[in-house]
Image (cartoon, rainbow, N blue to C red):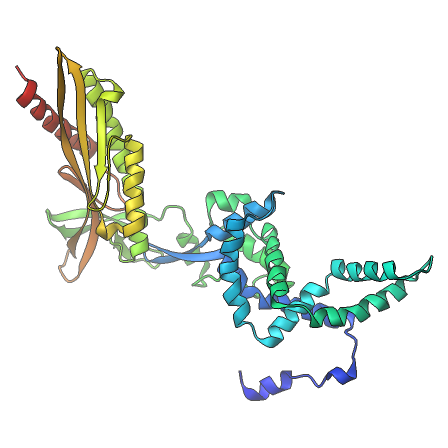
Length: 415
């Protein structure tokens, strides 16, 4: 800030003046206190993610936890309290002395606190009837020493209680559906009400762009998909691309941001592998007349192995591995073993299924630009992340695995 303007902000009021704070001054100070809390609100409520190269806001896990805590009477849990303190502590430490004073005034000038001071004074007075104005004078006199003894721990606790306002900023639908083109202006309007400022003057969720049409496209649940010819490892072919709000095309799977790539990998593992294993399991039961407990699955990566688990447990294990170590590090395998007692002997056979996340280098049709695309590979089929296996690909994967299982069976038990 310019030193001239900063100097003009300094007040001539000294302690020796003993100037009482008028109601309109108090209102102005309390309003300023909420502005002081603005950076904290933004950190607690909003986080930004990148999807297909576009920054989008979403609620933090802490915001969702706080909303649930304050929406029900059970009170704040120790885990949420600890998590919130992890954010509060550095915020309070970085506050200036004047900001701390404004916040102290904000919390102590609440009607509830002044009423508390008046009730304390009333207990000390022996008179049968006491004028309200007299109680107000005594409460006001007690306010100053209370302010002087208001510690930083008290300040932190006051800010913690202020977070209860989150009930009036977001709704349960925001937790379920996420932040869309309807939720964002609604939340910003509620926050403007909290600050007692005109709507749009200061926003809780600061949009990275101003053009409404651009943001409207960004906030769509599913951006438009178009085709584009590119050079792949299979030659010149059509690729699915996102049509970005600025008119550019971006191939699906071209995920430079690690968090965005991990999220796409997790989605692909959860949806695509689940569908394939479900179909494969059904075909195995039908082909060999098997019971569920005769089909055994072992999921493993280069770091860890889980034996004899359910397919859905294995899928979650793969997802945990991606979350812990990243999609770049992931190499997965599934051992599928069949064990049954038949014709007075124990029959055992099966195969191993590879699940890979890997990169491919593609070129634009005119061969002027090269870019990386991340793919999910199962058996001999692969798809770029952010896309799905076609029905033909799913059938091909299942048939290839069944053929290998049958080959192993014929080698050991065929006639």
